[in-house]
Image (tube, rainbow over all chains, first blue to last red; front, side, top):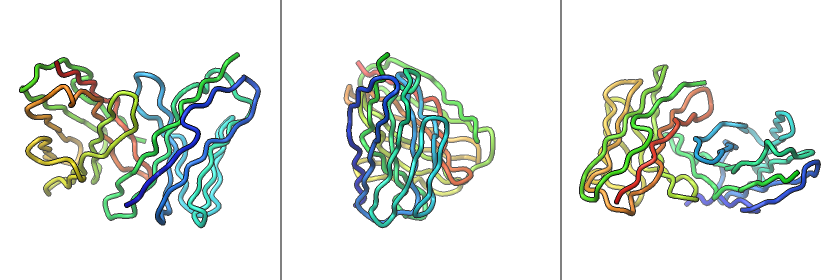
Length: 112
Length: 112
């Protein structure tokens, strides 16, 4: 059974600081997704990582995937208040239907 | 990307009743998924719905409780049957398109 673990679950940051969210998963998968969820809102797709060594960047967020270590990271550079949200990683379970298994999410709060 | 709408956006229901949630997408898609997000929690996959075949349910979810229809490539419904307060959640549909999954805005359900 595929399990996805994120840490930390809660993260309080000062503006301008850097930090990394980690996503570990338990079985082989070649697809990993990062989503953002604002309070009371749906999920916004941030990154899709499809191969070992994949790195994608958008603004102050950068995601990477190491399929051998079964680890993805979401790095935040020079955080700003607008990045406050809950971030989820999700892993394709490798079946034919493309089911996603979600981590518990990291609630990020960026303080001025 | 895909534009996904859900109806209703929210509802308050009495225990023992049923609610049908509609999901409409602006393009034809093979895979549609239904997820549940309990308050403050991550997302759990309920079932996968492919057009022309019966939905595939995840462990812990059964057709009698969560019947799903998928009459065409742009539409699906999820019914929450014989509701109890434990069914209070956000229900989200998602579609697989262009290597990622896009999520609808969600239906916020409160069962009294």
